[in-house]
Image 1 (cartoon, helix red, strand yellow):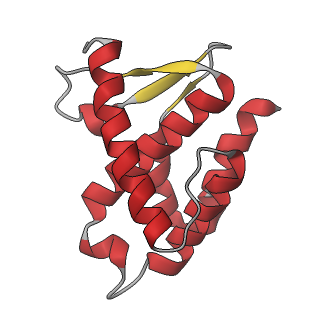
Image 2 (cartoon, one colour):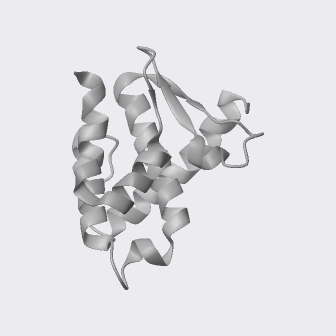
Length: 130
């Protein structure tokens, strides 16, 4: 496993990058629960032929997963878990919340992309508050 400090630094850089990109395209990325609605809107508007997501799918999925995980940590407390020995470490990265619940942001982003709004991001991030 990678140390949390090193992981947090990488995640912060990725989040800053995707946050700026989303903001510049008119999506409010401010690490709030409401910003998860913006991520869902991004998926709704940027999925499909000749749109942003298919063009750079893997990178966007990773970046959005980082942003979602970081938002969850800021909202509820927690830490990243990334196994450097896992060949699919980026996809399998998880967040352990302070209450012990474990979520998989990158996997949720993949589901959102594949299944549409039925696997919405807002509901996923809102759920730990219930």
